[in-house]
Image (cartoon, rainbow, N blue to C red):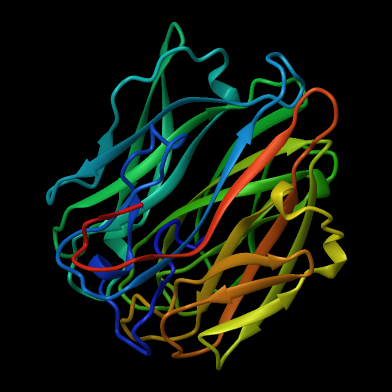
Length: 346
């Protein structure tokens, strides 16, 4: 539930957070039935707050709303790598129905520049139901990075999946990519990934959302360098998606009213399309990462580590289908804290 698919807030005040302290990934992605374990690089001593959600399909096999996690894993990029390809994931029915979902990411970089921790994913079709995932980033100081991921196949007949890519041409301007029609944007949402070319807060952010039935929109800050984005679009006529946007200039945490979304059950609702841009031309990884969590059926709390300038943010509430043919349940951890020396926590 972070704008950058990583840790959310350093709990040591208005600090100038390094990537190493402010990023983390899931260390046991294949064992989530029994525990969830987070890890980050190095000997960071700042306490890192993490908001997380797990969504599980518990309906009958073959249901219209079914999805299957075909594979989960961790991939690490060496100090010299801009891209890395995972091992083979097998058992895929239709590659076009798959999403390479980034569940966490981090970098060993001790600087406050965010570029090495940010990755985008693509799926490579090897044939015969086999795929690999390629993860790509930009490098600043030749440091290692790690990504946790899940390969999800939306096998139910109610789902459609698309993937759009975009490179910023005019910073600060809403730019678009065309996708096949989704029928109604209230029944679809975006999983957004991006990598950045610059070094400052205004470089290290992008918002992406479904803005029309055939359009995904992308927007950076006006001072940003080039941003490469990937938008995975998932549609299901039983989804109920409501989008919100706003700004905040003064708070480390603040609230956004979501009464209009009509949420009846927090356990059936997740937050997607969380994105932020910051109009600040300094280096501080803490300022451009914003996390969101549902605190009630009518409120979303947003959090960041450092207040430098106005954050412009977006997010969407997604109420998942519970009709016959598939039921979705959610496990959620809010304000989970990773403390100590990098290490593991669960």
